Image 1 (cartoon, rainbow, N blue to C red):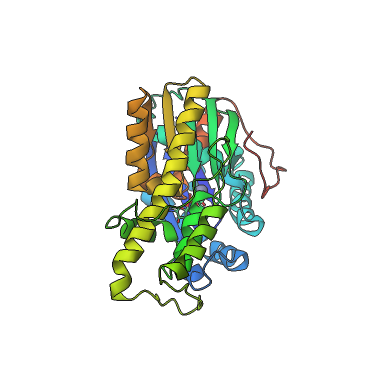
Image 2: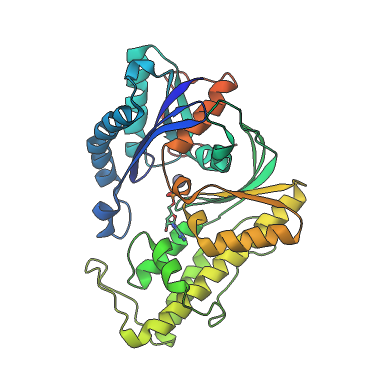
Length: 352
Ligand code: KG4
Ligand code: ZN
């Protein structure tokens, strides 16, 4: 059973994980949310400087937790794209350096492939029993990506539909910012939406006849709705203060619920349509937005309604982490794949 150490530094999370067979020996994540919150989004220069500080510390902690030596690692992996160039470079350089130093293989992993395969993580038994990646249609929904993908096996992917503008998570983050809520916006909106009426406001469901997605019109619709319903957009993005008064509470909850439902309706409909078109029995979901309880529940129900199996990654595996990168690396290593040390990071790395 191979032991793999993986680093993930594609955006604002620094992560290191060690996986032995199907057994996760360590998974360390340092979030930089606090560092970026006051800017209302991720600042690349700030992210890469933080990766430089966090990566060596997490590496040391992961090794200690896994109770192994670096010399015991059989392969070193890192996310090589897509993501922020200056951030990707840190994880890839560390993994390559270790691979050279210990004369072991290096694996450059696509961040999206990490998300895509994560719903199968639990399947790979700690005893080394292998995951069966059943053909499926997968919905990847994160802060940077929204796509449906037909998966036929490891490394065999076809993109069915993708966003033509904002990603679903980006829409959550931008609308949360408009509403004076914190970053990342998804969990904040979900919390408020729990007490709201999803039918109170009629918001657009764009491009329903296409396999692709579009969420920027929805964000604009919320922006124009705010003054009409008496909520004034937060103009001071540095103050961090919410403009919403106590009596606006119900209005805000209803708006969050209506916005969230508009996103869910589109994601569920297109995912089911893609699964039927590709004639698969299984639908999977991954990425940060798939932490959303309402989305998971509604997609699960929609799958059951048409006789499809549904599988999601555990919430801790949905947001960015290195365990999913180690898992993808292990599946690739098992199929005989290794990357050249000369392989560069690629901020626009394609999945298929
Ligand atoms: O996968 P991820 O950690 O990073 C990227 O690869 O982008 O996803 C982060 C995104 C953010 O946009 C965040 O607002 C969203 O996932 N997110 C959520 C929830 N939790 C995180 N969106 C909706 N509901 C949630 N509960
Ligand atoms: Zn991600």
